[in-house]
Amino acid sequence: MPNDPNTSRPEGSRSDEGSTLYGRTHDQLIQGHRYDGIKEYDNPMPGWWIWIFWGSIAFSVVYFVGITWFDFVDTYEDDLAQSQEALAIQRAEYAEANPTFEATPASLAEFIGNSDRTASGEETYQSLCASCHGDKGQGVIGPNLTDPYWIHGGTNMDIFNILTEGVAEKGMPAWDASLRPEERAELVAFIQSIQGTEPEGAKAPEGERME
Image 1 (cartoon, helix red, strand yellow):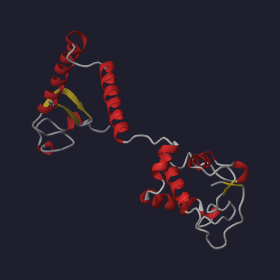
Image 2: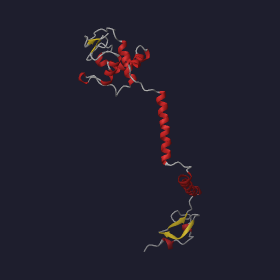
Image 3: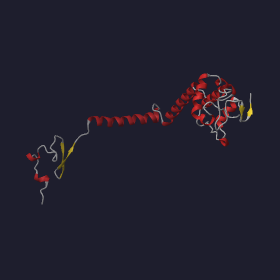
Image 4: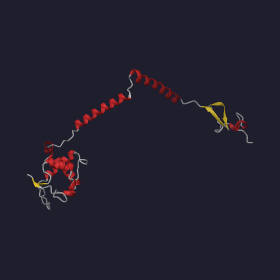
Protein backbone atom coordinates (compact mmCIF):
# COMPACT_ATOMS: atom_id res chain seq x y z
CA MET A 1 0.00 0.00 0.00
CA PRO A 2 1.56 3.29 -1.05
CA ASN A 3 2.47 5.76 1.63
CA ASP A 4 0.04 8.58 2.28
CA PRO A 5 1.88 11.84 1.52
CA ASN A 6 0.00 13.41 4.40
CA THR A 7 1.81 11.06 6.80
CA SER A 8 4.95 10.14 4.90
CA ARG A 9 6.21 13.72 4.91
CA PRO A 10 5.92 15.10 8.39
CA GLU A 11 5.29 18.77 8.80
CA GLY A 12 8.57 20.64 8.65
CA SER A 13 10.63 17.78 7.16
CA ARG A 14 13.68 18.84 5.14
CA SER A 15 12.49 17.04 2.03
CA ASP A 16 9.35 19.18 2.15
CA GLU A 17 11.31 22.41 2.43
CA GLY A 18 10.77 24.81 -0.47
CA SER A 19 8.71 22.30 -2.46
CA THR A 20 6.14 23.66 -4.89
CA LEU A 21 4.15 20.45 -4.67
CA TYR A 22 3.98 20.48 -0.92
CA GLY A 23 3.35 24.19 -0.80
CA ARG A 24 6.16 25.49 1.33
CA THR A 25 5.34 29.20 1.15
CA HIS A 26 4.85 32.02 3.60
CA ASP A 27 1.06 32.09 3.08
CA GLN A 28 -1.27 30.92 5.82
CA LEU A 29 -2.14 27.24 5.49
CA ILE A 30 -5.79 26.27 5.85
CA GLN A 31 -5.73 23.55 8.48
CA GLY A 32 -6.91 20.15 7.33
CA HIS A 33 -6.74 21.11 3.63
CA ARG A 34 -3.97 18.83 2.41
CA TYR A 35 -4.78 16.17 -0.17
CA ASP A 36 -2.32 13.87 -1.87
CA GLY A 37 0.49 16.10 -0.76
CA ILE A 38 -1.14 19.28 -2.07
CA LYS A 39 -1.82 21.97 0.49
CA GLU A 40 -4.47 24.68 0.28
CA TYR A 41 -3.56 28.16 1.42
CA ASP A 42 -5.59 31.18 2.38
CA ASN A 43 -4.26 33.72 -0.12
CA PRO A 44 -5.97 37.10 0.40
CA MET A 45 -7.22 39.04 -2.63
CA PRO A 46 -4.93 41.90 -3.81
CA GLY A 47 -5.63 45.24 -2.24
CA TRP A 48 -6.45 46.92 -5.60
CA TRP A 49 -9.08 44.27 -6.30
CA ILE A 50 -10.69 44.82 -2.90
CA TRP A 51 -10.84 48.59 -3.53
CA ILE A 52 -12.44 48.06 -6.94
CA PHE A 53 -14.98 45.66 -5.43
CA TRP A 54 -16.06 48.05 -2.70
CA GLY A 55 -15.94 50.99 -5.10
CA SER A 56 -18.33 49.14 -7.43
CA ILE A 57 -20.76 48.59 -4.58
CA ALA A 58 -20.58 52.24 -3.55
CA PHE A 59 -21.10 53.36 -7.16
CA SER A 60 -24.12 51.08 -7.57
CA VAL A 61 -25.75 52.68 -4.49
CA VAL A 62 -25.10 56.21 -5.79
CA TYR A 63 -26.32 55.26 -9.27
CA PHE A 64 -29.52 53.65 -7.95
CA VAL A 65 -30.33 56.65 -5.75
CA GLY A 66 -29.51 59.11 -8.53
CA ILE A 67 -31.59 57.42 -11.19
CA THR A 68 -34.53 56.55 -8.91
CA TRP A 69 -35.12 59.56 -6.66
CA PHE A 70 -32.80 62.50 -7.30
CA ASP A 71 -32.61 62.48 -11.13
CA PHE A 72 -28.95 63.40 -11.36
CA VAL A 73 -28.35 60.25 -13.42
CA ASP A 74 -30.03 60.13 -16.84
CA THR A 75 -32.30 57.23 -17.64
CA TYR A 76 -32.11 55.34 -20.93
CA GLU A 77 -35.04 57.39 -22.23
CA ASP A 78 -33.25 60.63 -21.31
CA ASP A 79 -30.08 59.54 -23.12
CA LEU A 80 -32.07 58.50 -26.18
CA ALA A 81 -33.95 61.81 -26.33
CA GLN A 82 -30.71 63.80 -26.01
CA SER A 83 -29.02 61.71 -28.71
CA GLN A 84 -31.96 62.14 -31.08
CA GLU A 85 -31.98 65.89 -30.49
CA ALA A 86 -28.24 66.11 -31.17
CA LEU A 87 -28.67 64.02 -34.33
CA ALA A 88 -31.48 66.27 -35.56
CA ILE A 89 -29.26 69.33 -35.06
CA GLN A 90 -26.42 67.67 -36.99
CA ARG A 91 -28.74 66.76 -39.85
CA ALA A 92 -30.11 70.30 -40.02
CA GLU A 93 -26.60 71.77 -40.05
CA TYR A 94 -25.51 69.34 -42.78
CA ALA A 95 -28.58 70.07 -44.89
CA GLU A 96 -27.93 73.80 -44.56
CA ALA A 97 -24.28 73.41 -45.55
CA ASN A 98 -25.04 70.88 -48.32
CA PRO A 99 -28.38 71.80 -49.89
CA THR A 100 -29.97 69.07 -51.97
CA PHE A 101 -29.99 69.81 -55.67
CA GLU A 102 -33.44 69.99 -57.23
CA ALA A 103 -33.60 69.86 -61.00
CA THR A 104 -35.64 72.71 -62.42
CA PRO A 105 -35.27 74.66 -65.66
CA ALA A 106 -33.68 77.47 -63.65
CA SER A 107 -31.24 75.28 -61.69
CA LEU A 108 -30.20 73.38 -64.81
CA ALA A 109 -29.66 76.66 -66.68
CA GLU A 110 -27.04 77.60 -64.06
CA PHE A 111 -25.01 74.53 -65.06
CA ILE A 112 -25.07 75.31 -68.78
CA GLY A 113 -21.94 77.16 -69.83
CA ASN A 114 -20.24 76.59 -66.46
CA SER A 115 -16.79 75.28 -67.39
CA ASP A 116 -16.26 73.34 -64.16
CA ARG A 117 -19.66 71.68 -64.35
CA THR A 118 -19.18 70.91 -68.02
CA ALA A 119 -15.75 69.38 -67.39
CA SER A 120 -17.16 67.17 -64.64
CA GLY A 121 -20.00 66.15 -66.93
CA GLU A 122 -17.52 65.22 -69.65
CA GLU A 123 -15.66 62.89 -67.26
CA THR A 124 -18.90 61.15 -66.38
CA TYR A 125 -19.90 60.99 -70.05
CA GLN A 126 -16.64 59.39 -71.16
CA SER A 127 -16.85 56.72 -68.46
CA LEU A 128 -20.56 55.87 -68.80
CA CYS A 129 -22.02 57.18 -72.04
CA ALA A 130 -19.32 57.15 -74.73
CA SER A 131 -19.69 53.43 -75.48
CA CYS A 132 -23.22 54.01 -76.79
CA HIS A 133 -23.11 57.64 -77.94
CA GLY A 134 -19.48 57.95 -79.08
CA ASP A 135 -16.60 59.77 -77.46
CA LYS A 136 -17.62 63.01 -79.17
CA GLY A 137 -21.37 62.45 -78.97
CA GLN A 138 -21.50 61.37 -82.62
CA GLY A 139 -23.72 58.36 -81.88
CA VAL A 140 -22.92 54.62 -82.04
CA ILE A 141 -25.67 52.37 -80.72
CA GLY A 142 -27.38 55.38 -79.23
CA PRO A 143 -28.37 58.48 -81.20
CA ASN A 144 -26.17 61.37 -82.20
CA LEU A 145 -26.15 63.99 -79.44
CA THR A 146 -24.55 66.80 -81.43
CA ASP A 147 -27.32 67.58 -83.92
CA PRO A 148 -30.60 69.42 -83.22
CA TYR A 149 -32.72 66.26 -83.62
CA TRP A 150 -34.11 64.65 -80.51
CA ILE A 151 -36.21 61.53 -79.99
CA HIS A 152 -37.43 62.38 -76.49
CA GLY A 153 -37.04 66.15 -76.43
CA GLY A 154 -33.96 68.34 -76.28
CA THR A 155 -34.65 70.82 -73.48
CA ASN A 156 -32.49 70.72 -70.38
CA MET A 157 -35.31 69.11 -68.41
CA ASP A 158 -35.97 66.58 -71.19
CA ILE A 159 -32.36 65.46 -71.21
CA PHE A 160 -32.23 65.36 -67.41
CA ASN A 161 -35.38 63.23 -67.23
CA ILE A 162 -34.05 60.77 -69.83
CA LEU A 163 -30.82 60.45 -67.84
CA THR A 164 -32.87 59.88 -64.70
CA GLU A 165 -35.50 57.45 -66.00
CA GLY A 166 -33.74 55.85 -68.96
CA VAL A 167 -35.41 54.28 -71.98
CA ALA A 168 -35.65 50.58 -71.26
CA GLU A 169 -36.87 49.53 -74.70
CA LYS A 170 -33.86 51.20 -76.31
CA GLY A 171 -31.32 49.88 -73.80
CA MET A 172 -30.81 53.29 -72.22
CA PRO A 173 -30.26 52.72 -68.47
CA ALA A 174 -31.77 54.86 -65.75
CA TRP A 175 -28.97 56.64 -63.91
CA ASP A 176 -30.94 57.90 -60.93
CA ALA A 177 -29.57 55.13 -58.67
CA SER A 178 -25.96 55.56 -59.85
CA LEU A 179 -25.55 59.30 -60.32
CA ARG A 180 -26.44 62.10 -57.97
CA PRO A 181 -28.78 64.80 -59.33
CA GLU A 182 -25.82 67.19 -59.59
CA GLU A 183 -23.91 64.65 -61.70
CA ARG A 184 -26.86 64.22 -64.04
CA ALA A 185 -27.14 67.99 -64.31
CA GLU A 186 -23.44 68.14 -65.20
CA LEU A 187 -24.09 65.58 -67.93
CA VAL A 188 -26.81 67.86 -69.29
CA ALA A 189 -24.30 70.73 -69.34
CA PHE A 190 -21.78 68.64 -71.29
CA ILE A 191 -24.36 67.33 -73.78
CA GLN A 192 -25.54 70.88 -74.46
CA SER A 193 -21.93 71.99 -74.88
CA ILE A 194 -21.37 69.62 -77.83
CA GLN A 195 -24.44 70.76 -79.73
CA GLY A 196 -23.55 71.75 -83.30
CA THR A 197 -19.98 70.43 -83.16
CA GLU A 198 -20.54 68.12 -86.17
CA PRO A 199 -17.95 65.43 -85.29
CA GLU A 200 -16.59 63.21 -88.04
CA GLY A 201 -18.63 60.07 -88.68
CA ALA A 202 -21.70 61.43 -86.93
CA LYS A 203 -24.77 59.22 -87.03
CA ALA A 204 -27.73 60.27 -89.15
CA PRO A 205 -30.35 62.44 -87.41
CA GLU A 206 -33.13 60.71 -85.47
CA GLY A 207 -36.30 62.17 -84.01
CA GLU A 208 -37.63 65.67 -84.42
CA ARG A 209 -35.71 68.84 -84.98
CA MET A 210 -35.67 71.26 -82.09
CA GLU A 211 -34.23 74.76 -82.16
